Image 1: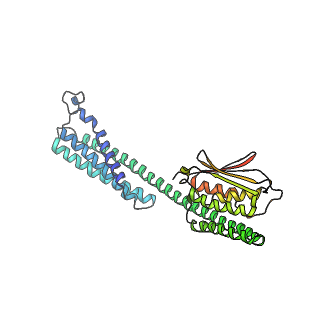
Image 2 (image 1 turned 90 degrees about the vertical axis):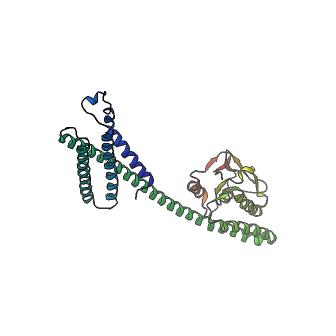
Image 3 (image 1 turned 30 degrees about the vertical axis):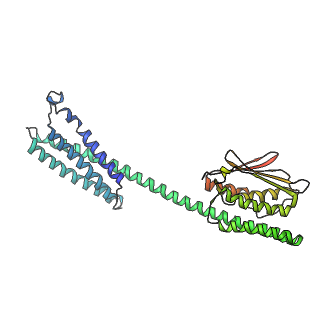
Length: 339
C-alpha cells in the first residue's frame, strides 16, 4: 500500500499540475487583461476546471498504483492501465463538459470544450503516470538496497563467526601446550599460570556473543595473557602499557590484543640477555602495539590466525583496516571506535 509520504507526494503533485494547467486562466479573470480579449473566465469556472484536473490526477495515481499491486504480466497490466485511464478520461471529460455548458456556456463551440478538456485531462493522466512509475522504481531500488544490506549483514555475521571459531581453538592449543611444559619444569609456577589462564578462558568464553568490547575489558585479558608470557619466557619479555583514561571506554573488536602478543613471541627470539620489549599506547586515536625486532633463528610452526584474521575482523566491524609498519621495530596500529 501507499505510505503517507507517497500519498502526500501524489496530492502535492496533483495540486501543482491543476494550478499549472489553469494558470493562464488566472490572467483572463481580469476584463482589462490582454488575454481576456479572446477568452474570459470567471472564478467559479476556473475552480471547476482546476478541480477536475486535480480529481483526474488523484484518480490516475491511485488507480495506477492499485493495478501495479495486482502483479499481473506485462501485457495484462498495460491493457488494464489503458482501459482504466480511458474510462476515467471519458467520464471526467464528459462530466466537465456537461457542467461547463450548463453553468458557464456563452456560445463557445462545443468541439473546443471537447478538445480542451480531453487534452488537459489526458496530459494530467500522463504526468501522474510518470510520477507513479518513478515512485515504483524508487520502491524497487529501496527494496533491492534493503535486500542487499540484509544479505551483506548475513554474510558478514557468518564470516565473523568463522573468524571467531578459528580464533579460540588456536588460542587453547597454544596455551595448553605451554602449560604442559611448565608443569614439568616448575609446579609452583604452573599454579600461577593456571590462575591467569583461567581468567583468560573466562573472558574468552563469556564474551563470545560480543563483537566489540570496551578497551578496559580488553586490557584486563591483555594483562593476564601478558602474565602468561612472562611466566613462560621468564625475563625474556618486558611489556609496558600507557593508555589514557579517556580511551578506556572506547571500543575495539573482541580478543584483538592477544593475537598480537602471540604473533610477537612467535616471530622473535626472547632471552634474559636480549628481552623482547613490547609497548602498548595510544597515538592519534589508534591503539598502538610496538615491539623491537629480534627475528627468531628458527620459524615456529603454528596454526596461527595471524594479522590477516585480525585485519579482517576490524574491516567487518569498524570498516577500517589495521596499520602495520616495519622499520627498526614492528608496529601495529588498531583503529578505535568511540563509545
